[in-house]
Amino acid sequence: MLKRTISIAFTAALFGALLLTSCSKQDDPAAPTPSNSDPREKFNGLWHVAENSKDFGTSTYNCTITDSSNSTHILFAYLYGFNKKAYGTVNGNNFTIPAQTIQGNSISTTSAVLTNANQINLKYLVQTTSTHYDTVTAVLTK
Image (cartoon, rainbow, N blue to C red; front, side, top):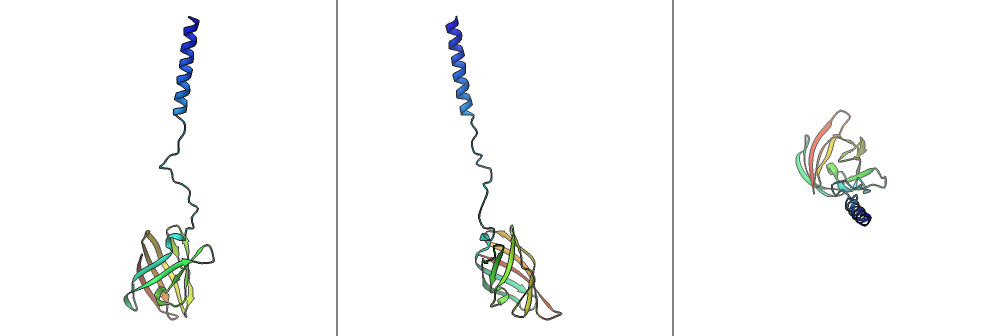
């Protein structure tokens, strides 16, 4: 009888050990993995701009977005046809171009959002004289 009790206890202990090891915690594949990537990276590249300016009507051209030496800024080459770069600050999928003077004109965004990996919707103002603003809407696509 003692031998049978020991055998049952041993079998129960072995079964319990197997059950516990099969229930070990595993990584959840649905859990987000932290990203250490630069938040500016998704904006970088050559973008085709289709814009509508209150002053100049519709136009298309290319704009290049690159990182700045300032880790919070991105640079826009050729935006509004400027030969000098404007800078913007990234916040998630949005960015702002703070008021800055480029080639004698002040430029600033009213809204800017990366809608997907290949499209940016952008609205901005260009102050061309002390009292006149050109209102511009643009879609940038990769």
